[in-house]
Image 1: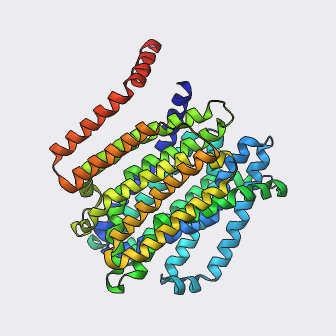
Image 2 (image 1 turned 60 degrees about the horizontal axis):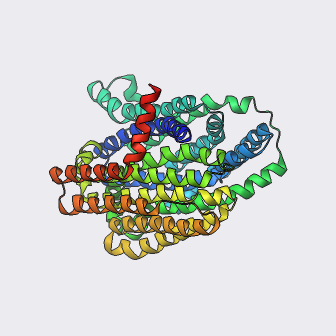
Image 3 (image 1 turned 60 degrees about the vertical axis):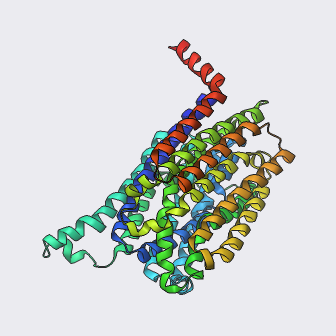
Length: 490
């Protein structure tokens, strides 16, 4: 049990570093949706969607390659230096080319060139801190990691509130103030990205010592091995970006122009209610990736992975059901403007899709451990193809509901494909009966609660307690063992 305790502790610490920043970001959603028209929020969402693609490209799998080779190579300093130098120069090249052709990019994307410029700087600054953050994780400095991550989002949140709320009120009450001479009216979208730039710049400054004290010794042989390992992960990342973000871009392209951005706006706002599952999945992934690699050589590793996956599904199933039961309460916290609520029907599909993605993350450990990352790329590409096909087929007739269905289908397919191939290449003794029962019951209860007894909290809470009892009944031996050990230790 010590192994699982260590995993839980590691996941909890990185979870803090993930959950708190995301919770602060959570506060930006009601701010944006309350101040911006649906079309303007849709435009912001489209730009952020493009940013996800370029984040993946600028990282080109180097983060995962860093952990893989940091754990395997005896010369760990060389891994750090080589990966940092690689990211540094590719980022500088990107910055130069992108700024040079920003007008062309603006014309091609239909996005104002000013916003393109802001986006380029945000992407470059964020890319430069990829390896410094990975280094903190490798050095097991989770609190430093957490403080910097939280600080980044706090700065973004504070500046957004100042730019969008406080300064306009100050100018209205005192039009002759110094602030009024600097403040630009009707520039809300610009201020959103300006806040992001300042936050990213401060984060880079905090971590810049890693570059200042870098010896700049580049191991070309090691770099080729890292690229060989990382590039398939980049392909998988691009495919993931298609699955997660391309629906917003396609909505803007495939729907009539007069409603497209507004439809993207309401869909993106309600999509954010999937945040709770995203938080759980992301925090878990941050803790589990180093854990999987560090225990890959253990004889009992497959059994460990099977046990970890089972408990991931247990907790995730409970989160799935809880969020869906209380979704109509959460919307009051996140989305103050009721005109956005028209897209609430996508929420269960998006939460379940993110849960499937989390299960896929667990199941996909096998291809990383046996250095067959290209298989992960193939699986992700299959998911991306499903996403694209279904979006093109469904958006014209179903709008954002078609996008939600496509996302669920893509992640569900990837989960099943990974399970099938994993049994072939790296068999892991998953407790399929229990995993299937927890997942199936949570989905069934979610459907009953949201689509049959929506906002009937007597039924919803009753289903939650019934599900908790089902978990206790099936896991009481393990829970009793944990409680007995805790009692003895006290």
